[in-house]
Length: 291
Ligand code: PDD
Image (cartoon, rainbow, N blue to C red; front, side, top):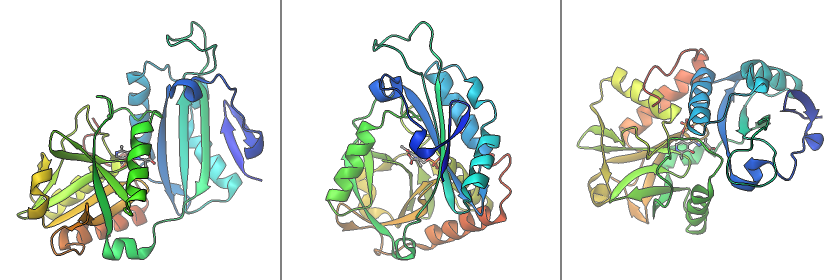
């Protein structure tokens, strides 16, 4: 029997039900995190929880009592559900109240934690790279908040799938800023480039790890724009994310990037990121900026 944590109680998955007037359901009025579990241990959990508190504050969601010990909840669920290679999904919504846009006067947030096994992408995806498409960034101007309001991301990813690609890259003002559920890195003239942190992108935890690993390895790094018009001149391109890890992109909108194969910097960072999570100890990491 799979257990789920809902509002302070550990309940069987089938019994973890949410009232129809939950504001997460009605308005997407909530926040979430996805944490990767390697060998039974949550990776970079502290950083995820820090970002979750920041998202809560940005949506003016009071931190609920039921979320006081999320590390304890995750550990108990992993043990009860017997999971090793898995993910934890954490969500907090403003709670249940008759539908009205303004905050309800008195409401108690809904807190959900569920764990499940992950099926990593096939090894070929990392070895040979995958396709991406570009799509206009139609999202609001607070993409730094990890809200459950993901309609634009869902549409972008679906467009990618329907065009035979793995990821959709959002383009704003001629600049590739991030993916539908990933951050984006390019290599141009030997320099690693990724969009700087701002209200326009999510401050990815994998992004921060990769920047740290790149600087340790001595690669020149620039937090700046990846221009759409520069795609033909890029040597390498990859995306990063909790579930994607470091994933090479070898074609965008059907056109090859570099020589159409994962490049040496991408491969090196992929390897270093693997070593990083194989080491296990991720307390206090990544050290870099999470916005
Ligand atoms: N997505 N950008 C967006 C829009 C994202 O949704 C994500 C993560 C990232 C990468 O962030 P991180 O490295 O912290 O996972 C960037 C999660 C995994 C998801 O929605 O499933």
